[in-house]
Image (spheres, rainbow, N blue to C red):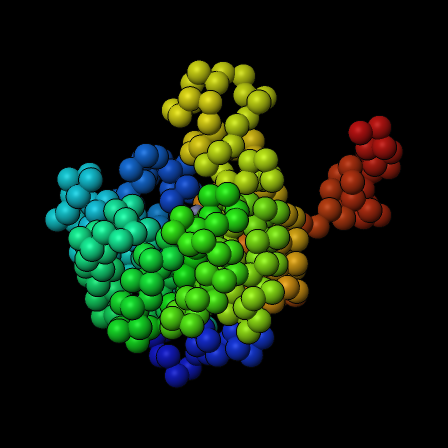
Length: 360
Ligand SMILES: [Zn+2]
């Protein structure tokens, strides 16, 4: 692993604590589903083994567009999910391959950070000792492979229970690897097993030893911002994360799991009756400008770990990076309308067309 020289690179906490933004790209699950490499429903990333070149290319695209963190695609690649699809034998190869892909892309971008990935197990039940034990075992085996691959950090995603996030924290602390914890709130206000606000929950996790805490998934940029604002009132050291979904959620429909498209011609075709989640969300897709706006506002609030989640794509990432004043490898292709036949102002363009554009 030629790019894996940690001494040469500024680490996660060093970047955040010096006030830098760290840009995180995810959205692999939904992107792979759209491209025909992953099945909606179970959402298991078998593509890592079946078509590693596709995962590698998406990782590279995010990197070119300014992502600082190259995430190993093991979301829903844990034992519980592999059991559900009857492929537990693929668990270890899948996890190891995903890490290998992230490292391979990092060889091309030596300053980037490689992140291992763990996530909600869907078997956690507060107060149930058996479930807590099972969850711990799931994290321990994944973090074991992650630790062997010598990553820069672990991103733990989409946990709606503080209890489950604490187990993740224990396991990552034992491994001595910095942890970014993304929490999920289905109503934008509460976790499922915590009475207080999300800001208090984040502070509790930081006090517990988690390194960076915040929100990911479920909420779109505009809906996540006010939640992050509350978090930043409690957590003031910048160790706050926010990586929303790429969909226009609203106060009435705060999570992409609840969205209903009243303009859809044929609601009977939806796999979940009356609900756009998960494969009919296209009409709610955010533009790159909504992500640029999110990045600028969240950074101003004090959020230092920023990015995309489900529905996010490389063009969103580039817009975030540029909103924070960066130039990415892909910025040479950022929009420039000056040479557009109808909207441009290049002197060689035909007035005949430009005048016609006034009618548009
Ligand atoms: Zn997501």
